[in-house]
Length: 407
Image (cartoon, one colour):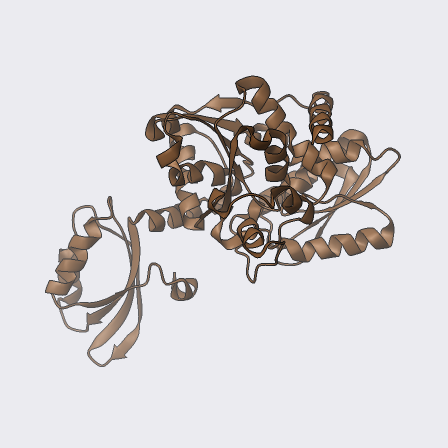
């Protein structure tokens, strides 16, 4: 491990010629809420708004004479590689899933300019990964893995070098996990000197799956909403460095829950985070019982947020927090029935959606209704009044199958 420490420190020193250390900021809101000393390592403020530039820089600087680099990325690694290709004056060929947010595709083009070409292929990261590796093998380019590469892992470990230089060794570090490169690098740097926790989205919990199985395993399904961490299989090299971690240190969070943190940090703190960037911050609530009075660093890994996604983020955050619900109402087809329903609504209850679907019987019709309110307990009152009035309804808010088709 001493060699790893030396290489990580050398990487951190070398990258200062390209970009400064990212800020390490104490967050008053979180510190007061959880009665702890909570700091944010603002990787969302790097030149490419994510930590991925670190691994790309370190791996590419070691390839003297190489003039063609190939990578696969859900967006952030692509931007780091593109930035470094232009900086070094070399060519990059970048494969990205078709589902990548346009904001990340456009930024990749902006950072790389004429030095990069982009291929969109596959719906998931793992699909475009295979395409990139095949293309690289055929054309003879240097394939630059976003996480399964020791040079990349050492580059990401520079995050820990900067944290320790500014703050010392914190009691806890919370790390978002996608393919595992950054979490492996930071964890290896700190070793047993701090307690590392790992935060994954429920739709991409590949570290948890690997620890449970004892080896990297491919997830049956990946939810691409947290695109920066939507990886179906953790890298072998990161797993080799993380295999001794405990399952209890892996915190799996729902995608809707992460949305609530994105909105709060945007509205209250003015911090723009992408879903993967909010993973570590949201995970603090899972460990509040044992971080009280401790120093905690959360790595906000990226801020490449496409604001066209904001309505969806708000929708999912409202559903998670319980202030928005959808239900199917069986509305009697008689004069005054709609007026009776409207009279049941409270002063803070707003109709966000009202869609007559079809007549389910001669005397009734089915209506899709979305209600927004100010606090979750308002729905207890609303549903009680609906029951008293004899209305038949079905709450479909958390029915993922139905929601995909009608919401």
